[in-house]
Length: 451
Ligand SMILES: Cc1cc2nc3c(=O)[nH]c(=O)nc-3n(C[C@H](O)[C@H](O)[C@H](O)COP(=O)(O)OP(=O)(O)OC[C@H]3O[C@@H](n4cnc5c(N)ncnc54)[C@H](O)[C@@H]3O)c2cc1C
Image (cartoon, rainbow, N blue to C red; front, side, top):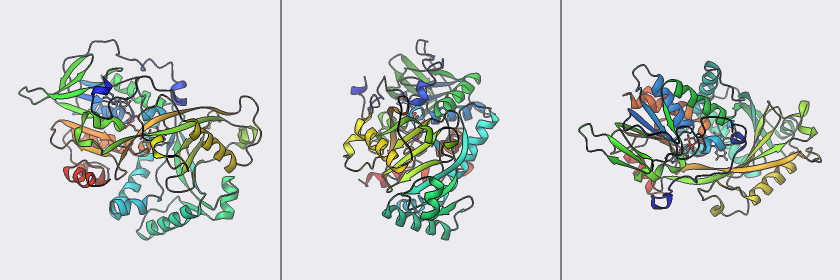
């Protein structure tokens, strides 16, 4: 089925399992609705059960004037895309992206992107508190540790530019090399800066939202891929979403398919690119257990594209190490895949070797300590590194929220409520999102000219 669909097709039906999926195998949501009959019609069809789809559906269902009959289609298990397979950070950009986004888009939008991420952290925290969600949420301090000279030059420039442009410096602490070495436990640190972020169990959070949605009347059909969307031809100009298990007609369709958005939306071909990322579960040695645990989460920054993320979960001490695409000596073809059934042993080796070199007090491992397993997931990359959100040009009634560039946890809690407002008749100015997130003909055209 997948091979006959336009690229990138469908996600692999049986992906490898992440740390988050391995610890939620009891969830009855996983295969929900996979054997039930599909209804013929709905008010809204949401395609994709990750954080984007789950939260958009929640916002629609809980709006006073919102739709009641909301259907969610998921190609495989519930929440088995990037949301269920990420590295566990909800980490707003402190200021790092200011220079890059100023060049790529403009300084005003760069400022708004950063402000939006800081707002999202507060929105995530408030949502979890309000709904009393058990998802290992740890509102904590985080370090970017400067590990390379080029990155040091870049980040100093971005710090100054953001400050000069009037950026919000509150809560950001800059540490010189000497103080950074002490504070971060990284003897080779060239500097560091610290701000507030969070780590969480993304699958537990997403599943909790899906449960809330069910209590508000949403029907979830897992293992039910949407394979095409056709015009109904009826008087209301509705859409028919076709699946191997039957068809559903609705006036509104939401594409929350992230890396796979282009399969059903030709306008996103070459605009949202599936790229694989990898993370690892590591059990700490005594030097990193109990009172010796890391107090902060980290990004160890060798360059803009070569970095490693580190979280140490307060609830069990387990470390989650995330990797980037800039692993020296590795060709990009390793990352240019939509296959999340396996992980790459060379990336695993590089990540672990690096971690132990950076944290040189790690110590000897006994059996049961150290690396336990790795996993992969598929990111949706866009050419300007911001997502596509809003009404799909020329397809009235179809909406998209996709292309989170490996950074969705710091963006979706502002974007999904914004999209829901727009679906319900609001305008962009009613939302908190930067204008540059909007999908427009002009943006698609401009980006299509870029390689
Ligand atoms: C290894 C890794 C580490 C990461 N680390 C972080 C991190 O630390 N912090 C952070 O902010 N972000 C991180 N990310 C990125 C983050 O996970 C994503 O940005 C976010 O989860 C995107 O959510 P989403 O709901 O848009 O997409 P997804 O969670 O990918 O959901 C899309 C869903 O759509 C389904 N689908 C696709 N096509 C179809 C179809 N045709 N029919 C039906 N269903 C379909 C998929 O199966 C999937 O469940 C990481 C990602 C990976 C892979």
